[in-house]
Length: 152
Ligand SMILES: [Fe+2]
Ligand SMILES: [Fe+2]
Image (cartoon, rainbow, N blue to C red; front, side, top):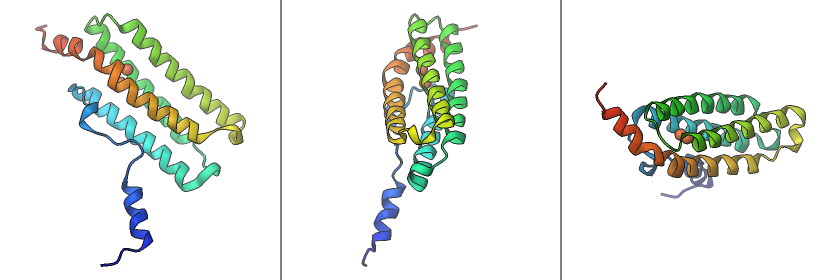
């Protein structure tokens, strides 16, 4: 069977920008669900940019991402507090920095959409999310699991 070029582009498009894999699993179910959703929303943002190019209106998806990030950060921060995780201050500061960065991108989109480098934005999000989950989030896992297992 011959493959037309549209077949191969369909295969290409089926590859997500952020590929979820087991290495991102913390084993804490609500956190894993939220991380997966963050990957999904970032992929929606990527697909929007791919489909619409520089004309893409990314504000709605970026705003949704910003809201979901805040929700996720508060559930993590609550769990870290409950577990008395010693790295909470440093970790929370990383969350704040990401919140500020996403807000700055949204403001830039509203002020002067032409000035927003969507490629840079997507690369930043990919790097930040994957590094943060693999390094910073994995650090709290033993503490959160111990707190989960502890009797009330
Ligand atoms: Fe996280
Ligand atoms: Fe985190």
